[in-house]
Length: 489
Image (cartoon, rainbow, N blue to C red; front, side, top):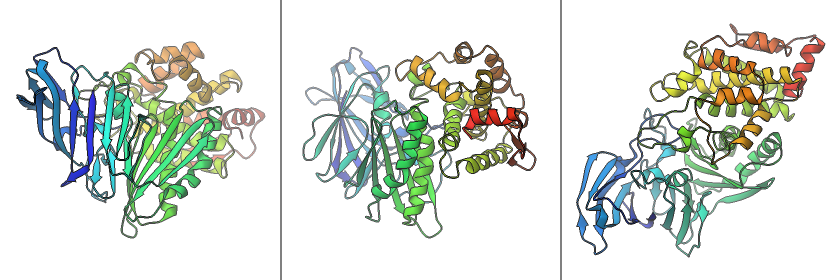
């Protein structure tokens, strides 16, 4: 699949896209655009901005194209197909305070001919039904002084064209690009090259300040993960739009090896840095799960009608747990005090959700239960906390969730998914038989999480009514020992 995107002649916020198609052996074939992509749990209908799509044979003769559904273009005489051409309008013009339920601008594209382009390929590029695993070449024609920040594999570029390659459409969609005049800083974290790229409509450079702010965090995260990160490259892409005083709004979407951040706020380097720091502290840990640990439902993701994984609670809950556990484990400034406060804050937030809804059911019905969706970050975090305590107790401090994630990553990895229904038993076989019952009670079932009892064993008192978390003044030797095993304190 050979795509071309033209950023040189953007007219009325529309870009021209062309596809040189591989030979087709069917008389009728459907060309699709995603309705939904990983990381969001609502239908966005990315094809709604696709205009004037036409198909041609090798001699330039137009072929018949129908549109039976908004996301589906049906091409007849497809065995003669050689090229598809169309225009795409951008999904948002300026990032501002306007909010539309279920619309994630971080999954859409936006382009201004004189300043920037945020490219999410799912909103610009389609695929043939049943052929999303074909390799992809993407040629992007862009102003000569623009740089495209991404973790896509780069081919040979010229003054005003970049060539990118992906092993499949899925890989392409998982690698957005931020194009603008260079404001880019590279960090070397262990053996991983981390790119920080930024655009601000104020014209100010932001990347160096952001990089300085997050570099200590990334180094501690790398140490927490064992010193070696499971990716060769990572990219933080930051778009900033100037907002009025006291006006702050943000949107972000994680990918396997990158994160796209959109922020509208006053030009305040501290506020911008804090926003990216907060995103980075969570999103960077996604290089463990779901990048290296995921089910077949994610490996073979259906962009039109996806089957949800029952382990969304793990992908987000374990990532968020690592986010709050890492600072205290690494002994970062104020890590312990912050850890206790975050437990208290999450307890208060979790009280607003339906505790009788099992996490597995919520994961499977994430699209239908948007009112409860955020609980995967809250109750999911606490399930992982309890699992960590359980493993630490049984192993006398020698094994916890950090070790479990490392071992699951080694067993599976980016190209080897687990069977969605089997993971609980796999973890029990890798650790202790009793862990299978843990998942039955607290993930598959709706049994109340024993947070007060479990944390008291580590010398931490939880008041679930007042949402207070504090230390036992005179812990027993057993309490002190478990706390040391668990949080290195």
